[in-house]
Image (cartoon, rainbow, N blue to C red; front, side, top):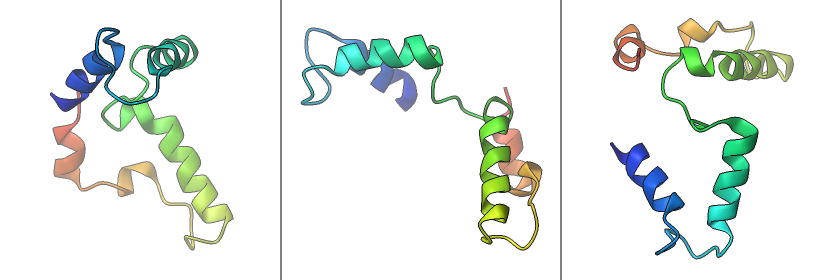
Length: 83
C-alpha cells in the first residue's frame, strides 16, 4: 500500500524522504496534533470534513443546494473503501 510506504519513508531518520531537514519533526508534530492516521481512507473517517466541505460549497454559491456526503461518490466507490 502506497500510504504505508510513504509513512515508513517519512519516519525514517537514516534517509529523509524529502529535502526538508525537519520533516521527521513535522511528522511527529502532526501525529501529536492529528493522530497517527491523519490521512484516513474512506467516507466515514472523513465524514465531518466532507460535510463541512458540502456546507461551505453551498454557502459560497458553488452548489444550488447543500449536497449530502453520500451523493458525492458512486455507490461502488463508497463500498470499495469501506473498512
